[in-house]
Amino acid sequence: GSWSALTLSSVTGAHELVHASQPGVTASSSTRSPVMGTFWLSSFSSSSLPIKTYNPEGKFRVLVTKDLPGERWLQVLTGLNCRVDVCTSEKVILANHDIKELIGTQCDGVIGQLTEDWGDELFAALAGAGGQVYSNYAVGYNNVDVPAGTRHNIAVGN
Image (cartoon, rainbow, N blue to C red; front, side, top):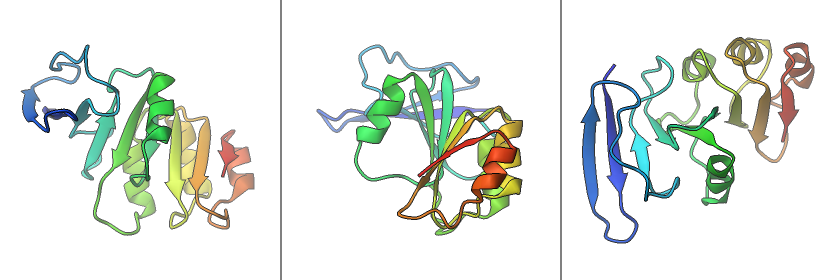
């Protein structure tokens, strides 16, 4: 598919739209930080939901189902050589089929939300994509079936 990238400068506020016909064809990013660098407006999966990708050349793919506050979490993940795909959909609650599409065929881990039903269906999709870890961004975890994660060999954190 066709990829587009929006490059932002935190110093000048300038932006540039780069369009490439193949994944992996990027504007030079050697001097850009992983956080304020190139945001890919495409996904690793076949999902039609919008995604911002940070550190597109990262070794490990982490899906974040909703944008999170602050930047430290993103700095940590990109510093560990993770490609981070953040769903930017306006949907308040993502359906299981949306999350499965976002996971796609290759996903090492997911950071999800309290509004999502993490049970056999989603853990099976994550395991099928090579995933090994799920973290619930919430105060509690009553939306997570921890034994289902265990059955699918997915480590679960909160």
